[in-house]
Image (cartoon, rainbow, N blue to C red):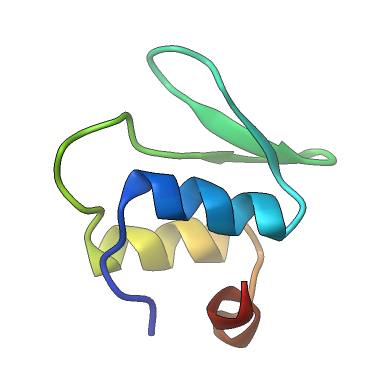
Length: 69
């Protein structure tokens, strides 16, 4: 189960899984081929575990692969 993480760590993990970006202003996203995953804007708080789970599912990444990233 993913844990709450910072936006910086979210971007780092997605990049290590082959995503590029983030791109966009109001609605930033990261891409991998034709797959586009929206990510939260920069805030001073961590991203909740529930939102991390939804992002991981949308990115089509299993939890074991996410933990290794």
